[in-house]
Amino acid sequence: MDIVLIAIVGMLVGGAVNALADELPAGRFPRPPRNEDGSRRPVYAWLGVTALLFEVWQAKPPHSKLSWRYPLTELTLAGLMAITQFVTGDDASLPSGQRLIWQAYAVIFVLLAVVDLERRQILIKPVMFAAALAVVDAAVFPQSPPNLASALVGGLCGGATFSLIYLGGRLFDGLVKRVATPVFGLGDVYLMGLAGLILGFPNILVAIVLAIALAGAGAAVYLALTRLRKRRYKRFTALPYAPYILMATTLVLLFQGEISHVVFGLQM
Image (cartoon, rainbow, N blue to C red; front, top):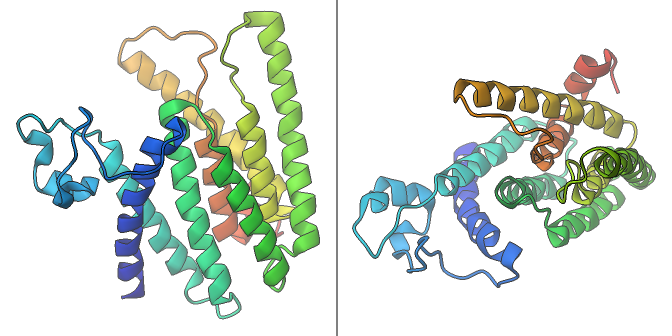
């Protein structure tokens, strides 16, 4: 029952995440949900899921069709929060306060992933809030790794590693292709630093390897879909990297031992 309740809460919070994803990148304060033509959506259609159920997407003007992003975001967050509850619910050593912080990570991660997928942009303020939350988590709940020292070393390790990748990418951009949009952005560096604060050292090493592997798999899928759709691939296309970093961080956070064993063949 707890998991069902958490999933319902996750879906409702997903509606708020959608509103934030619409307004924060433009520097606007969140407002009641609107259709793509700017008209206000009726209250029963504030959630993308309920809009789908009530067939608002098929309504006549002034209502316009909504993107699939709205229900998918709500369902994704509902599923992620339910999985977090399922994985941590039977762990008596995990304080309820820390469990709540992990659920907050899920909300922030989904928001960051949605914005990066749609706009190729990393929202810095949510990253900073999550970083502060990670420091509080490590300081207040040191009995469940990471402790504060481990978190700070992990943040430094994650940020420094991806800084090197970022600088290498900038050098490649300047010498080879000279494009306005780099393949690997500074926001990705901030995200991996955040991952290090959340996971600590040495678990951040697992997340780095996993994020790179997931990104490689994602790029392969993108190329395959491009071929299937018979579209021409544009060289050096910038793909969003944040979802892979966030996915890797979530997997290592929830399944530390299992993921470490799969990636490095050892228990961390």
